[in-house]
Image (cartoon, rainbow, N blue to C red; front, top):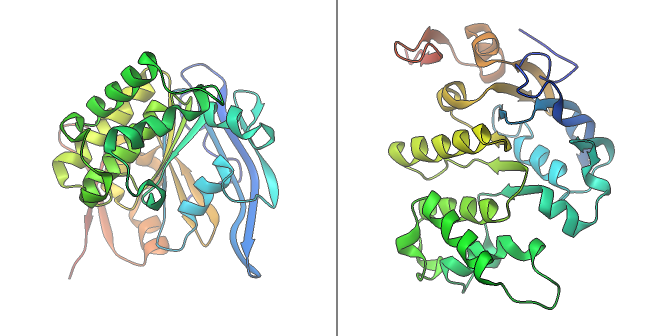
Length: 275
């Protein structure tokens, strides 16, 4: 199995020549159990990293540590030279956004108001959103295909629709680093491909993105780099073609698989052995 102690910065062609994201030796435990154990991640500006691994590997926890919603116990997160976790909360929110699977705090709001919450870091403490904020919110809704739902109560949406609204909220935040926790959860195939294509377009424009994903074929199809977690540790990292091997999938997931080449894209295509 391919292993690494140094993240994926050397394995992915940097578009700027410098790492944008450098998470170093992150550690987090809960009730005496190690959840994240010395994780390193390095990603260049404008790249898309996919964090994969079985349930309980620590994917969601890792993203929460990187954005500061969980208290890091040791390690650092640096983005474009800024110590992310040392920034004031408002300044950090202008730099990094996390699109999560659940948003229970959005109960009772209309969809457009949920999205406008993403503008909070950019609005004065005693000010209301202005025309530019509303335009940015509307553009974010349009980008995820949810304009027609703007006046709907958020509570009435399906799981997949809520996922897209969460992404719109994160995009309205105008971050430089976008973290996504299972962004394709609850989405049908067309919506999954549309959403990941949108993220790829954002990275082409200079955004750096990291997504926790369950679907290995989605990760292989869209990510510049794949980071494999198992029991809170990075066990492999690099381009999908070098990381996603049959041996690694067998060792990490406990299933047999053949890794083929996609006939159109040339990227890895994983066929699982169901016999």
